[in-house]
Length: 299
Image (cartoon, rainbow, N blue to C red):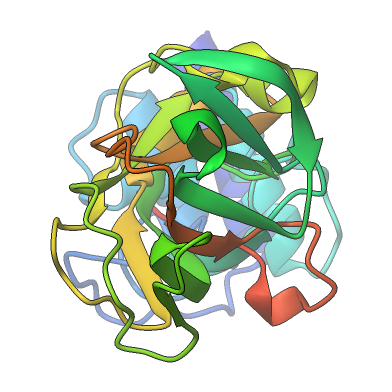
């Protein structure tokens, strides 16, 4: 009975749109709803969708026919595609719109929740301070370590994520500075503070939201991006690293933010002088200075 009803629906729809043609099929597609790999959405895709539901061998693009994102491909998807071909808007359950490119780039900008935090022996001292920059390294005062916590609101970002690159801007670096004259370097390539690798860790969104001192040493939750500036390297103004796995993890967990901490491998060299990378954060008045993630959504 189910197959009979499906056939009636398909015949009815394809009769209504019998004048719509289809290009020759390829093995890939670039748009949602193009179930027959023709690189466009037309009446033939309505046939490909229910054919898959009826366990008939179809094209490798048929997965794009789940246009209402209910994790199954059935007559309801064929109806949605048919209405789209007819020029009638049809709800698609929050999915990408029918005909929308599958590979879609997006940009996330740093959050005003970003903060700097001080600590010693991996234990924070005092609360985090929302600021336009985080000095990452150590400080002359009690040889405390300095770290930055930053994140991105990911509300509305769709999965799966096929690529994601985090970019951070260095405003300046310091080495053996204050109270000694030392070095303050405000132009690239920047003097390295010599505290080992500069690393990015993936932390919970609670760490970002709380602004608490324990954000200094809060544990990684996995999929750490890793080393963004290797030990001894003189970095350029903008430094970048792959964060696809961390962003995907955050989306899979239902989190509202993806959050990171940036820190040096050596907490302090205990010389009572400043050694830092100064990294712009989300509270910067200049949008282009804020941390950014460029991501791509795809199959």
